[in-house]
Image 1 (tube, rainbow, N blue to C red):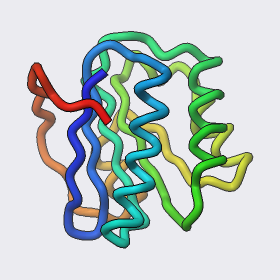
Image 2 (image 1 turned 180 degrees about the horizontal axis):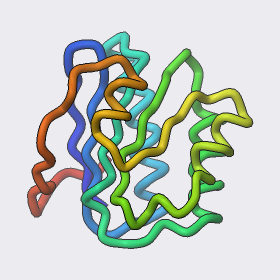
Image 3 (image 1 turned 120 degrees about the horizontal axis):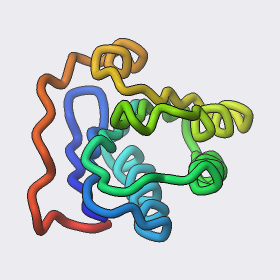
Image 4 (image 1 turned 90 degrees about the vertical axis):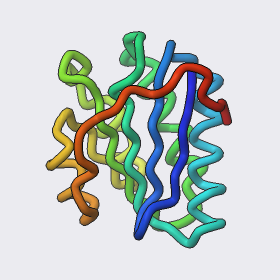
Length: 133
């Protein structure tokens, strides 16, 4: 799993690509919160459209629980996923049930409007050899 992090004006942008790995995803979540603290950000846009693998329902539940357990500030997250992964809202529902505002969507416009950030524009695939958390 590869990650690119960028602190933008008013939010943290994370692009994830490659094969899904639960341990790497947890590391990415840890880094999200560390960067939000470091830059004083409370909005996060996770662009997961570059993931090669399916994320199972149980993995989504586990990620949402982990995300909610680590959240120590009023961080709000939007997760962009490929249309074929929009068959369930398990991550969103689990996080919301634990008090963490998360929106899962396949629409860039929806994610940006929900976060209140500028539209991120067209998607560019993650480069090979990106950094891990």
